[in-house]
Image 1 (cartoon, rainbow, N blue to C red):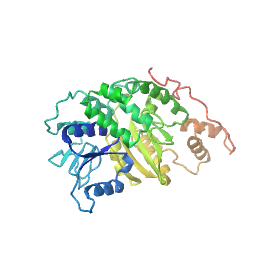
Image 2 (image 1 turned 45 degrees about the horizontal axis):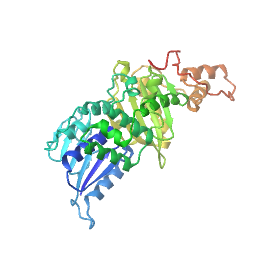
Image 3 (image 1 turned 120 degrees about the vertical axis):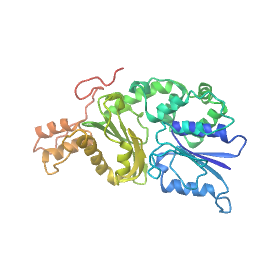
Image 4 (image 1 turned 60 degrees about the horizontal axis):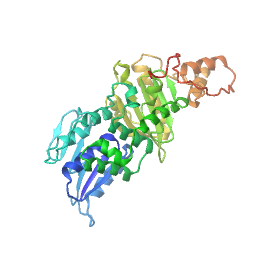
Length: 378
């Protein structure tokens, strides 16, 4: 049997669909969409089990791992995420196709020779753009109705089951990548794009602004549309999101606001890999993700606060003097969401210095930046 393991995002879905279309014709196969939180030990055990047959003998099954981490037993591994084991080098052979400079894994899977590769490949530029977040503007995320953008929005809003993700993969392949026909048969329409714009503004009450970056706690991954922070607060440089992954673990997502056109001096993927508090993690230059222990949440936030507000901006470290009563109270105000920014918190804490029962309630921002500017260019 061919076991096709893929990342459960748009790039992974398209990669699996291309592989299914080109390399699993008439064969018995099974699909396995995996979230990023499955990296590490759980993923290793999974591949080990897939390689073994009913009697426990290895190498009886074929395993393809697409847009996910490397495993030595995989018969085929295709990925474009930087992997320290292989570095910046391009590796191309019968069992590996690795290129950290490729914008998507789907493009690498498409490059594998096949006599069935007879479909129009124009959709690949959208797969590149979505996975690299290389949108022309933040507004494109919330207005573009390309079929792959509709799929992207659907899987974020619906949090679909593995069976639904596999159905999308199979439908793309059976439609020979006529993606509008595929979406029509799946019932995935453009209304999800409109809903994403509406949902983006719902994050305003939960976002905490910490100088150059925002911090957003979610009850679950994708509770708010990805990049909602940049849509609502277009002047912030970075976002950090946390969501519960279960068993005392948090899933952390971090990204840079490339639409500021300033250029970032910080490699986010490398910063995550260098932070020892991450259980698993990595990514690209401008975006990354990983898992941490819930107990390490404050320490990880301080790590990135120093990185974003200290190293790059040459500003004082947030919370540097823990013995300062005003500073300590200001930090508490920000953490509890009573105020949105640390500067506002310091003003409030100073005004009420000596009064430990401030009792300030969160107030709506009405979609404005702290300086009074509009929330978006819409």
